[in-house]
Length: 424
Image 1: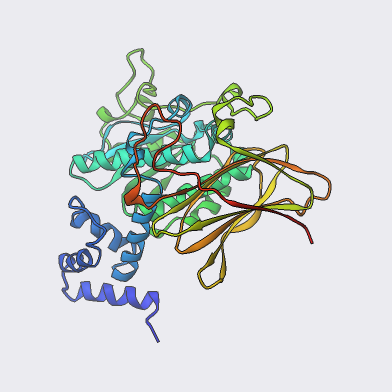
Image 2: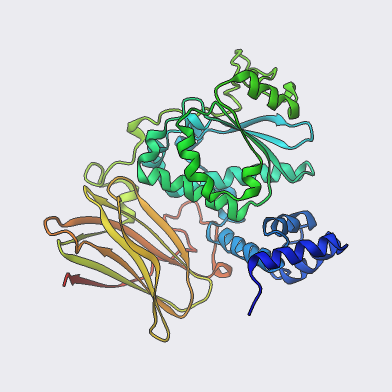
C-alpha cells in the first residue's frame, strides 16, 4: 500500500529538519524534470514548486509538468508574448504599477472594484480576458526576475465593488477559473496582498473563492475595511511613499495632480455597450461571423462533430455562440480500444449571452466527439455559430502568422464527420 499525501509531506519535511539540504532536494528535483526545464529555470524557480507541494517532490513534479503543458496550450512562451490586446482591454482592464516595495519587489495595484466584468466579457470574450490576465502576470514575473527577486506585492482595491455582477454565471466562472489558473501555474510568487476597502458583501464572495486558494496564498492576504488610516499604515510599513500614488498613502500624483496616478494605474470603468460584440443578425458581415460555421439544430435533436486525432501533442479548441437561447455542450473521446470518456461534461451553457470557448490537450489515437445537444428543447430550434480547430503538435506549429493571413498557418480547421440525432 502506497503512502498517503500527508505521509509523503511529513517525510519530506522530516528530511529537511534532519539536515538534508534544500539545495540537494532541488538538485534531485532538477534531474527529474530536466526534460521540460529551460536554462533560466534556476534553483529559486524549482523551489517554488517544491514549497507549493510541501517538499513532496513527486507532487511538485506533477504540478510543474501540468503547468508546462498549460503554457503550451495558451502559447505563453510563444504567440502570447507578441499578442496585442484590443483597445477595450487596454482601456478597461484595471491594473498598473508605480514602483516597488522596500525590498525591490514590484508592487501591482489592482482597482478591482472598477472592473466591469459583465461588460468586459460581452465586449472581448472569455478567451481574450484570460489571455490579458496571463500577459499581466508574466509581465510582473519578468520584472521581478530582472530585479533579482521572486515575488510581487499587490494592492487589491475593492472600492465600488459590486457583488451583483458576479451573480451572472459566466462572470463568476471566469474569476474562479483565473484563481485556479493562478494557483496551478504561479505558485509562491505572492509576497503580500493588501485587500483594501472591502465592503461587507465581500465576505460572501470571499467565502466562495477561498476554497480555491491554497494556504500559502491565504496566509499572504491582509483584508481591510473602508478605513484608509489602517490600510495606509499597513501599506507604508513595506512600501515607501515615493513608490505609491497619493491615494494609497504615497507622494505620487499625475502631472495634472490626480492622486490615483491614472496614467500609470488603469482604473477600469463601465464598458460602453456599443463595444459589445454584435449578434450575427445585427452584423452578418463581421469578421467574427465569417470565421464561424452556422447550423440550425432542430428541437429534440443533437449535432455531433467527430474529430480524429492521430498525433500526440495536438489540441482541440472551440468557440461558439447561439442566437436567443442556450444549448447543451460537451466533448467525449473514444480511444483505440473503443472506450469512451467525458472530456468536457455535457451541460447547458448560456452561449446566447457570451461566446463560449475552450481548449483541451488531446491524446492519440482517439476520436473526439463535440456535441451540441438540443434534445431537451421541445419547442425551439437553436441557431448555432461555431468554429472548432485541431492544432498540430506544438513542435510542428508556426506560432506567428503572417500579417496578411486571415488564418494562422499553425492552426488547421479539421473536417469533421457530422451527424444529427433525434432525441429518443
